[in-house]
Image (cartoon, rainbow over all chains, first blue to last red; front, top):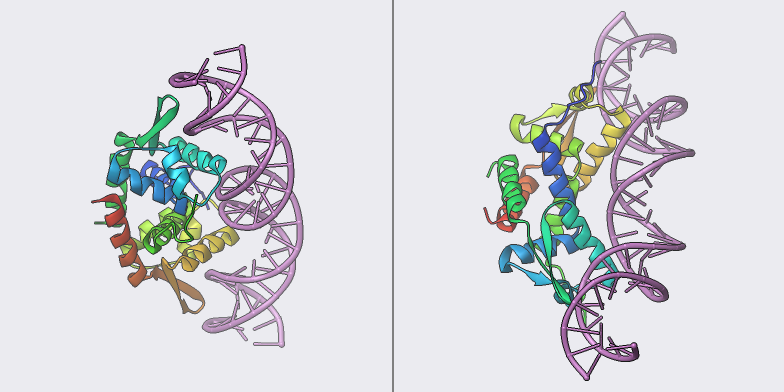
Length: 100
Length: 100
DNA sequence: TTTACTGTTCGCAATAATACGAATAATAAA
DNA sequence: TTTATTATTCGTATTATTGCGAACAGTAAA
């Protein structure tokens, strides 16, 4: 049986990628927070989240890599916000996917 | 600094769990398919997806464990459908989370 | 009973994810 | 320049995920 290279649509792959990025309570927390309050600092999160700072950095890095957030240097802090463009894309993709 | 045991809401944990379950193209494909055509057989998927049957079984198992799908034995096949209750819950959770 | 069909589980390997503390980098303030 | 602040990267360990083929289980048909 022939199995095409393109079994999955780009949308499916992208939606899965976003879903994966949000598939951890810490990252879900961060994204949800940023969807409500526009921005925050790593330190703010560190005070609340029950993980080491280095671990938090990794989660932030993962969200950045997935395109969901972006960091702006504001010495000596780093201000994190949602990546507006991709967030809107994620909203659109999930809306379609979930038929809501 | 005091870090509460309940940093995450139940909704955040559940949403992350659903997101994680959908965080792979194969599983995304399956869930999307089932959201559109009510049910399917493992063999149907196996013919289309570029993975071994055993791997497919594992993905189906993961989706079952996350509560997103359910299997009904229809010898010699197994009919898979969305778990209606949890699917609606996921829709609700993501709708809230994504503010859509 | 033997054979065919469908799909799962087992055993294994390779890679990815999660987590921590220590070390590092970059800037601002003293 | 030294110190303080903030957050990342590095090194490491542990666990989870993904994947395959072989072996197994359950049912139906010959």
